[in-house]
Image (tube, rainbow, N blue to C red; front, side):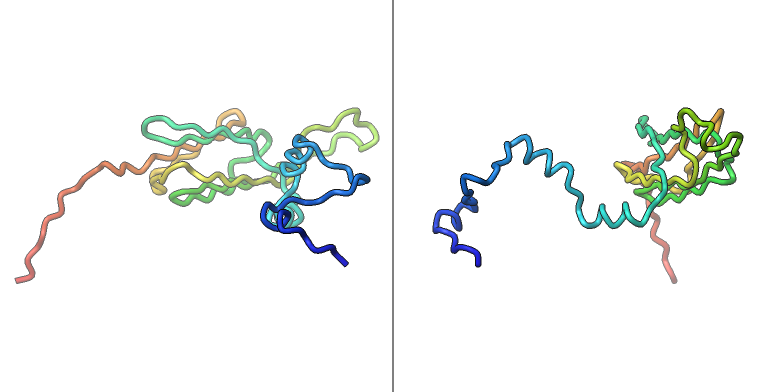
Length: 159
């Protein structure tokens, strides 16, 4: 049965340790917090055996630009979904077996399906987005929504 907490423990949230208990240092506590995953992160990790595509995302005055290395992937094998505030890139890189498993010294290349979802820092014009591939580099240009643009609206009469 758990001991009743003192008034001070209830007030401050402090925990009483026995001398035999090991007290973590602030650095250990910080590292433990960084290493812990939320239940949602654990669920996502368990569901997916996909690799995560590495990307560069930057902005110009007119566009948000996403660059990703997709060497070995045919453009028709890419699936790019765009909304006003998010981009998802999915694809698959197929391995051509040229050597048996036991003949490899090093295996660092990623083969198989991959995906990446990027939350955009501002809204974009979905209809004007462009994607190009050159020498294994995917470049997606997403024109920013011009929130300062004004249009005059004329009122029609239904007489």
